[in-house]
Amino acid sequence: MINFSIHTDFGDMNGVLYNETPQHRDNFVKLVQSGYYDGTLFHRVISDFMIQGGDPNSKNAAPGQQLGMGGPGYTVPAEFNRQLQHERGALASARTGGPSNPLKASSGSQFYIVHPESGAHFLDNEYTVFGKITDGLTVIDQIAAVEKDRSDRPLKDVSMTIRIVEQE
Image (tube, rainbow, N blue to C red; front, top):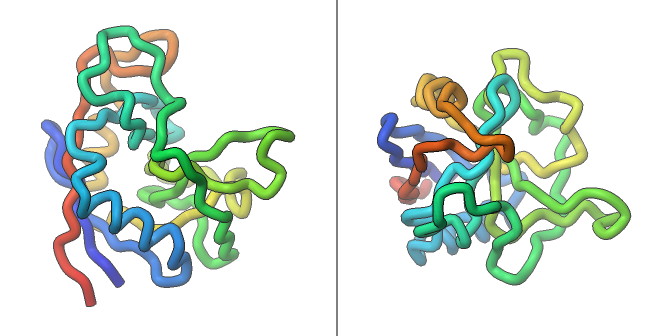
């Protein structure tokens, strides 16, 4: 497994990437190592659901700017695995929904982390889970509790830096 760390002003979240989802794992590692996520925001935060980030357009975004449509210009094929579920702390890929994405391909860069203790199991086998936060779950709670606008964007930016800390 590959270990990673997401640094925020609220603290660090540490986690693992799953070998069972190699395309998502390798894509995330490639983006992290290139510095792609450095300075991006958790731009969509819904308490008792998830915190979402990874939109490159969020770097230096103006307050109130609508975010969530940016990416690297490609998608990643879905890699559903019934053993990898949307439990608390699950790291999963965002994606475009509806008829425009019948194969449920993942965003090339946007991801979310599941917030509630009960998980978000209605998303199982609909969105690819490719990792999990193993340490720093209280950071998710703190980010989920920030004040947000009508688009669920935090009023005060929550930026991140992600690093790969160890590969086995």
